[in-house]
Every structure is written in C-alpha cells, then in structure tokens.
Amino acid sequence: MQPFTKLTGIAAPLPRANVDTDQIIPARFLKAITRQGFGRHLFANFRYREDGSENPDFVLNQEPYRRAEILIAFENFGCGSSREHAPWALLDFGIRCVIAPSFADIFHNNCFKNGILPVRLPREVCEKLMEDARMGGNARLTVDLERQVVVRPNGEEIPFEVDPLRRHLLLNGLDDIGQTLQHAAAIDAFEARQRAQQPWLYA
Image (cartoon, rainbow, N blue to C red):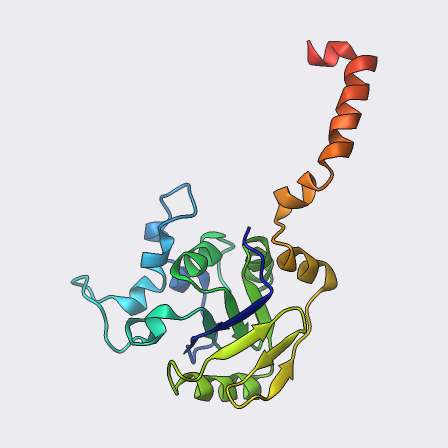
C-alpha cells in the first residue's frame, strides 16, 4: 500500500450529503476480482449519460477536476452497502483523500485499509474548502497527515483528528497484510519450533 504523508493536489467539490456506495460505484460494475479498473466507473450514474457519453455538468468531467486527488463532500459519505469496491474506485481514479463532516463507519474503515485518508471536518469548514476548490487548478489544497492539518490556498491551517494507530499505518503504507509481515521473523521462529515439536502437523 502506498504511504500517505503529505498530499498537495486539486480538490473536487461534491456538494452532496448521503452519497452512498452504489453512487460511488454502481453494483453493475462489481464483476472484477482485482482492484484495478474501477476508476472509470467511479460515480458512473453521475458522470455518464444513458448513451454512454460524458455528462459535462458533473465535476469530475470538468477541468481541472479530471485530475483531482482530493474530494470534498457533505455528511454521511459512503453510506449504504459495505462494498470495498467504493474506495477501490476512488483510489483507481486518483482520489487519495476525502474530506466530509461525517462518514459511514464501514466505508471509513475501508478507506484506511486501502490507503485513502478520510478527514472529518465541520460542515462550515467543508463549505469553505469547496469554495477554495471552485477556484480551479491554481487553488490547490494540502493535506498533511504528519502534522494533521489541511492547508487552504490562503495558508490557513485547519487541524483534524485521526486515530493514532490508523495514522501510523497510513504514514507507513501498512495494510492488514503489511502489519502481519512486520512480525514475519517471530512467525517463522514459531513455525520452526512447532515443526520440531509437532512434526505430524506438517506431514
């Protein structure tokens, strides 16, 4: 998993509350068993018309937001079903951070497991950040996980809270497998002892 330390990038404003996981990645696209390729279907019902052409009114079809790495939304982002494909689609598109007043719990957990930083900030702050984002590519936001601040284009720093363990894991690019592999030497030593003491388990 790619570490998340400090990100400066284009932020896309999505002024919607209760964006559910079926809106993030519609169920009809949940056919692949790998994490790649879901980005083109991110927000498919918003991004594309019935004939498959792009909807020019949707923010991610506009410049400079086609290259957005930060998404700003309103309350209860990621509600609905527990599909992990939702953060997969965001990440495959290029989104590394989502800022919103609140998140659905399972989506929030899945973000950390996939290298996306979900940042909770009050509604009024999210509205200010959306105004910043609407200024386009010259008004980039910085999300600094090491210092736990979001830096607006005007230099104002907005602190945010994050669980210390999850912060550590993101900073070091550790998913569940990565955490386990940190103890590889101890695991190997245990298996060697067990093989010597109970060889029939390995027959």
